[in-house]
Image 1: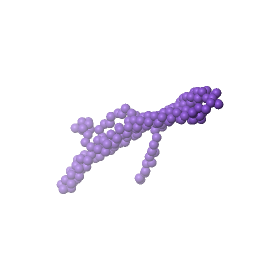
Image 2 (image 1 turned 90 degrees about the vertical axis):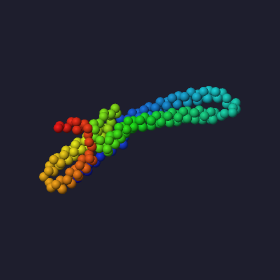
Image 3 (image 1 turned 180 degrees about the vertical axis):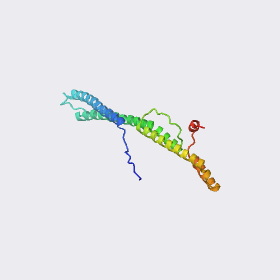
Image 4 (image 1 turned 60 degrees about the vertical axis):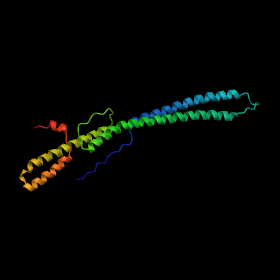
Length: 190
């Protein structure tokens, strides 16, 4: 019976996304709070300078002064937000590369049928743990294939010489496609 396994695909990493979201909310509250205080102080100064100038015509109107102060505060907020987004992107890419680098190495070694023992990684992540578990399953499968090939070669003596030679050639080609492990040969009893 062929049963299909449904995989649950995770596109998010809740641990880091919760920290980043909290950091961004705190940053926005802090930036808006500081911006409002600075804007209040600047507007208070503009109003105080122009409070008793009702009949005095100046080059800059009060609305132009207020607009200029508001635009300066908005510019500082936009620049701070862009800097924060740049920092977040850099942190996120660094985090992804710390996971994808070792994962790419594992996948490349598996693709080359290199099942030598895996090193431990500094970054612990569920993706790396799953990849290591999968490699262990594949390592055991290859050991089983290698053992079966050895048994076939040993029991092939009861066949006609021509069939025996063809079977041996096919098995040798199959064995050549499997990974050869120096560590396994050292641990194999003689």
